Image 1 (tube, rainbow, N blue to C red):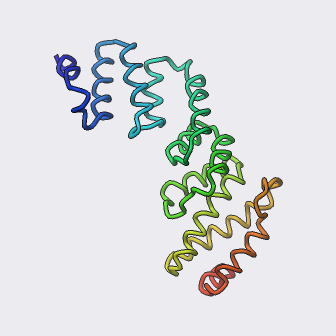
Image 2 (cartoon, helix red, strand yellow):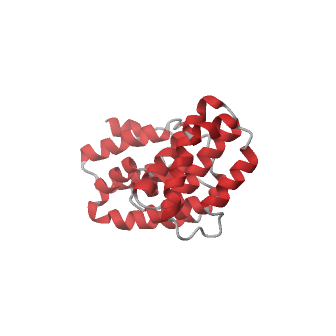
Image 3 (cartoon, rainbow, N blue to C red):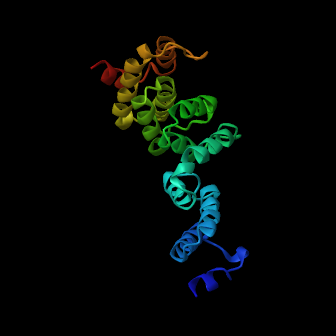
Amino acid sequence: MALFWMERIPPTDRFRADEQDKLLYSLHERLGDREKMAETAWRLFRNCRSRRSRSTLDMLLQALGESERERVIEKQVEPIMGSATLSYDDAAFLVDMGRLYDASGYLFRYRDQLDGNLYQFLLPLAKALEEGRRFLGATLVYHSLLESILGRAQSRYYHHGVRYLKKLDDLSPAINDWRGLPAHKEYKESLLEIHGRKRSFWSKYGQ
């Protein structure tokens, strides 16, 4: 009866489509209809709000079977890498799926779109790439975070910026190919040229 009424909600009235699809998925699961589970899970997986994520992938694989994991993930990489703009959700998906090589390449491609003010999205990416030894990708993210702090010129945040710059100091020796980007020495020189008057920052960095 619940499914009877859910299926009669007109598409134009589906204000909270992802929440309704999650309910539909539960109903199909209770009824043992794996085909409908998969259909609903694919919709959730591709939905502009819920997006690709570990949770929506798990729902999809529950319907398709765990053996389909690699095939499903592989089919997502190409559209992500070929997208027109940066998506932090897609970057997080690549990281969550263990595709750190792809995640690093994705961030390199869209490095000019990174917004260091969005540290809540960027910092987990940087840490994951660093732990996975994708040091160039991690460096790009730390660059964005550091430049955001220096650009705002608010001294109460300088201790974060100092931490990021010291992290960059540590990562740079492990990077052999900068792929045309300035190496760390040149990058620091440009920081000094642009932000050299922020004595409070450089004082903290020197301590």
